[in-house]
Image 1: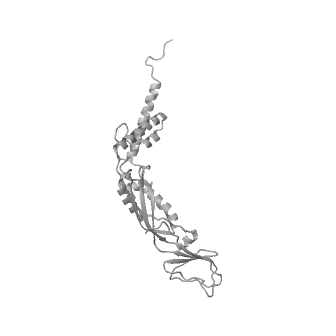
Image 2: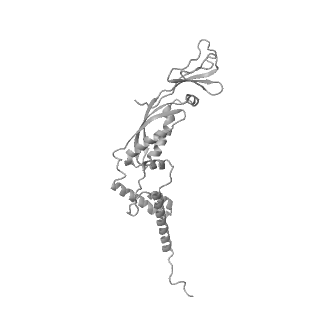
Image 3: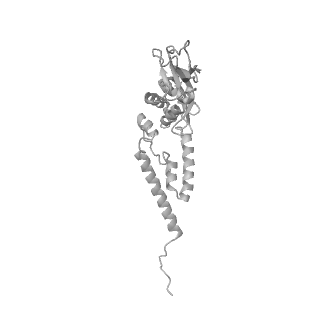
Length: 274
């Protein structure tokens, strides 16, 4: 069963300065001994190692660090391409200490609190490239990309699996005809207000991917991996989006020109004779 977190530091002691009858001994298997000197870097000793200055070494503290694999599990909402819709993600992964010295130096006592923020941010960047109905593709890409994820230099993330679930009430909402019509009406109403204010860039962002004047603008299907990489900010915006922006800007310019012509009509008779 997965745990929400674990503490990698099992034991902390303050060794005596003189230990003639009770020297510091190597740790048991599956753990590491970290000796904190008064000056310099921590000394790491494994189960088969030798403890330097075991009888007379001047150490402030000795730390026993857990090196075993632990299974962590948590749930996290991940955004879809429409940020108002969320995937319910269940994440399970194995984690172990990779650098006992860093764990002691940084006083890492809660592994989940250390790795979860970076892991969640990594997953969110990928999921944001997928429509809510493409949860199977999103799940496959998340699991594929996790093979290249590094959470923290002191900790090793082993096999990691993500399972996505979508609320049945949400699934298919984006593709429902009534939902599309209502969304299009909202965007077109907002466009009218934006035409008046004369902000073409904002109008272009508002209408990206939505039909204009009942003309359906097709959505260009991206390969799954490209969508994930684009979500991580590694690709330029799609040509279709740039073309849409140009069309909208041209429309706004024409509207502005027509408004100007109506406000200052030309007088065909020319100036009056005096």
